[in-house]
Length: 251
Image (cartoon, rainbow, N blue to C red; front, side, top):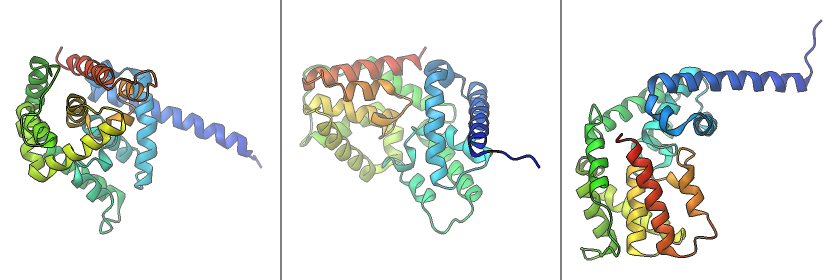
């Protein structure tokens, strides 16, 4: 009788994993061609591996569910599952009343599509309008808060950039985003008002977990660079990289 040694099984698992990874890449190339073009295959492989690990923690194991999960990451940010801007996502993923992974994924996908239609537009026209606004209105140095607090000033700027998403998030959601963003910016050494605005703005556009998102490796490099000790310089580096990335989507 044929016997397969443990080390052979591990090799077979690696082959199967690489094959599925390749299938997911083909899916992205067909259904998310701009992501494929802008991010490139090496980055997308990292995104896929990251996503498969996160998806499996929620019990998603079928090819269909894993494929949908990766697609949601590309649309909402790789850390959408715990993004405070998307409380409905974590609510569905952690709901004890949903026992079947397929049902959980169906609800998650339906809610995500409804959210994207409201915030970005059915043809992404509202998202494109927001990106054009960001491109045309660069944040001047120095930037001076125009409201009573820094957080209120940041919310005011976000409303001017992407009013439809702000409407979807609501007052409480915007307030939470600004508060958490300012705190996170300080932890990354972005202590100036302009630095906080840039950080929260990138969260707003790319997802709250952009600093660890494999889709945006440039962000992690800048924020963890020990040579960037000057807050203003670090903020400028982050701003420049984010603008370069966003402008690719407008070409």
